[in-house]
Image (cartoon, rainbow, N blue to C red; front, side):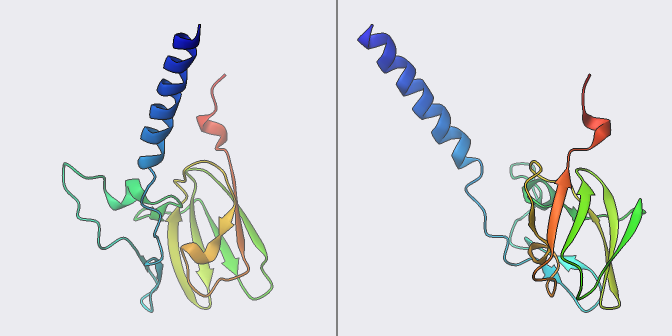
Length: 135
């Protein structure tokens, strides 16, 4: 019985260690909002077949080249925005805009300033995308 418990504990510890190393890179401080009206980020990640792309590493989504499903205007009175996972939204801030795809790791709220500088105090609430729900 003790051997069985020890084996289970070892398997659990190894599984946890493997899962946490997949998310070891969490420094996304390079992201921001440029004067040209587009965000940049993770320029230090080289895209190759052996490494994930910048889009795959981005926990909050990425700039989208296609059209947006809707437009959100963020001003000094904005406290939060509501989006859905995998939704593409055009965000207007101080006369500049960026089209962003919220391809997120889950649905945890996060500060909009993580992707667009100058938006401190605005929280992004991410709902699960209805189209991706099974059943």
